[in-house]
Length: 107
Image 1: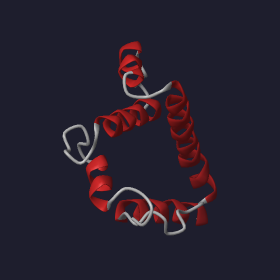
Image 2 (image 1 turned 180 degrees about the vertical axis):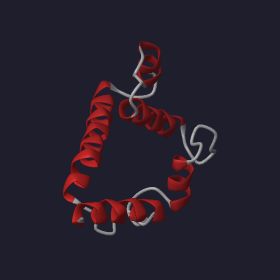
Image 3 (image 1 turned 135 degrees about the vertical axis):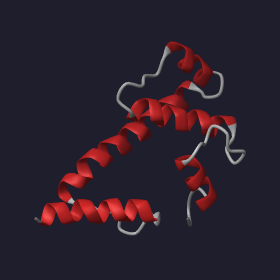
Image 4 (image 1 turned 90 degrees about the vertical axis):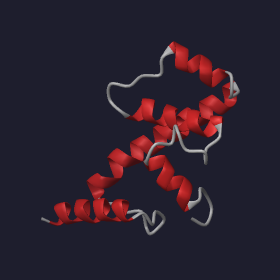
């Protein structure tokens, strides 16, 4: 990946990022926040928010939440119109899912 996380970090994030030595505490908290904001049934509890506040400023938390919310929006909006990654995400699983979505729209 040219401007972002290494391929190893991306693979670890898709695996068990909580135990991976590749991530800092702030990165692990960010990934957990993304999970809690993304998955139905998961919430940002008061306890977890306190943990976040120990590592991030209010401004950083607002920015993180906004970015995660935007990516969640895109992940729901783009497939409706078969908007693809334009080659920015080289992961085979993402390519395959994107191609399958595009094929469903063509039918």
